[in-house]
Amino acid sequence: QGSVMDHSFHLIRSTQIELGLVLQSLNQFALHPFVGAHFANGCGLVSGGWEVFEATLTGKRSLGRITLTPFEPLAIDGQELVDAFKAFDAFMDAKSWDFQIPAVK
Image (tube, rainbow, N blue to C red; front, side, top):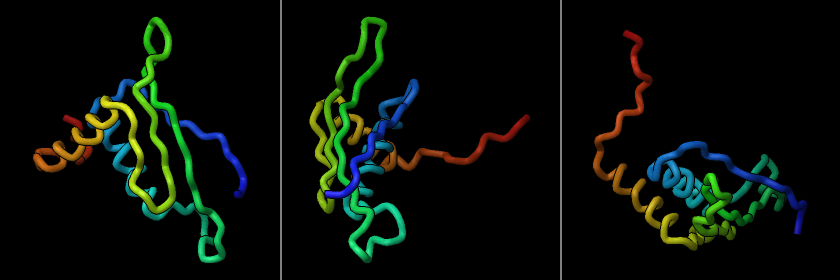
């Protein structure tokens, strides 16, 4: 075991598709989870786990948990998270996206 680091993500007013993008990105990262230039020397391997929650007027509402285990697909526990993961797949499959910067008129 190496160093332990605290980390968090903050998505503010994100859509289901945007949450799905973050989950899909973490899933890809989990398959080759290294940070830094010295991974050939065995350094920089990353693992992690996060509780995903929604901030509401009455407090935090848990959406589930994700766990990043090196070289394995991201483990997603929570139906809303699974739905977001799938929503991003559907969004990409629809090919109706446009990532251009909007023009100023």
